[in-house]
Length: 473
Image (cartoon, rainbow, N blue to C red; front, top):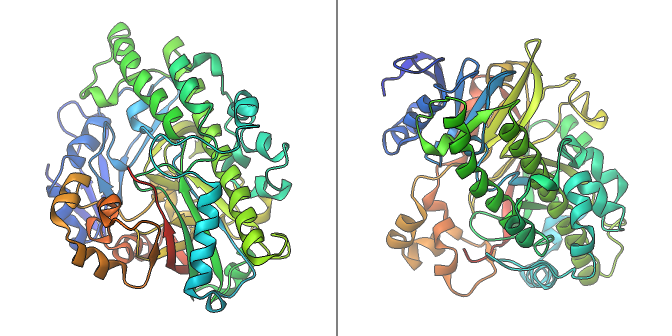
C-alpha cells in the first residue's frame, strides 16, 4: 500500500482498483512504521470500496488492525449507501467517562487509594462474563434502558439529572428496537449492567498533573493536582453478541442486494434495507446499554467514595465532566449533507460553537477524552474547526503495537513492573493484565501530538494514573 505524503502528519492512500474514494491517514514519521506491520491500510482500502462511502476514509494516529474497518478508522456513508457492523466494532459504544472531584490527589496516600480501589471492586464486578450486582434492578430496567439509555438508570435513582447533558447524545441514541436483537444477546445483556469487563477496560484514579488551557479547564471543572476518576467500558457481552449476529446476517444481505464485500469483516447492507435498519436498531440498543452501564458504574464509584471518605458524593464534587463513545455509527450533518458516520476506535470532537455540542459546552467545544495505556498519561482536549476534515473525529487512545498474545509471550514481570512504576493495580498476578501493559501500546504523547500539531485538537489537561482497576480477559 503506497502512501503519498500531503503535508505534516498527513498521508493519502490513493484510490485504486475497486476503491471508490481515497484514504487519508494521520501519523507522524515515528508512527508510520507501525502501519507496515499489520493489515490496517489494507482494511482502510477495503472500506473505501463500499457503496455510498464518502471521500475520504480516515485512519487516526492510533490506527491498528481490527475486524473489518481498522481500529482507529472513520468511514462516512451517504444516504443510499451501506451500514456495516464491522465498521462499528464488536464492543459497541466502548467509551470513556471522566468524573471530577474536589479532592487534591496529594491528600490521597497509597493506603487510601487502595481502600478506594477495594471498595469500588466491592460494587463493580470486573472480568469477562461477570454478572452485575444490582440484581434487584438490572433485569427489571434492562428493556427500558436499551430504548431510553442512561436516563432510565438515572430515573431509578442511580445517578444525577445533570449527568445526562454531559453524556454524548445525552446518553441515548434514537432508533433502538429490542425486537431486532437476538434472544442470546438479550440473555447476555440482562445480567451485565453495571460491570466493567476485561481487556482494555478500566476504572482509573488519576491526578491532573498539567493544565494548558486554564480557562477551558475551569469550565470543565478541572484543576492541577486534582483527583479524578476515568471509566472505560462498553456494552459488554450484549454488544459483542449483536455484532457477532449481524456480521453473519449482513454478509448474506450483501449477497441478496448485490453488494460486493471486499472482506467478510465489512459485511454490510443498504442503510434503508430491512436488514440495514434492523442492524441500526440493534446497534442503538447496545449503544444505549453502554451509556447506561457507565452511568450505573458512576453511581457505584460515587457510592464507594462516600463509603470510604464518609461524605456525600455531592459534597465531594463528583460530577461527570463528559462521556464519549468510541465504536458507533450515527447520522450527522457534515458539509450540508446527512451522513452515517461510522467511528471505530475514534472519538467525536466538535469545536466551540458547533450546534451538536451540549449547551453547557457550546462555548468551548465538548471535552475530548483520550486515555493512554495502563500506566501512562490520559488527556482532555477539545476539537477545532480543522477537524471537519475527519468528520470531526480524532483518535480514541494510544493504539496497540503488540497483539494480546504477543504481549503475553514477550513482556516479562520485570518489564511490566518497571513500566507501571508507582501505579497501583488490583491483581497479584501480573499475567492477568500483562496483555494491557504500556509496552504493548504506542506512545500516547506522540499519538495525541499528531493531531495537535496539525491543528485539529487543542490540549486542555493531562492526567497521570495513580491506581488502576482492571478485569481478567
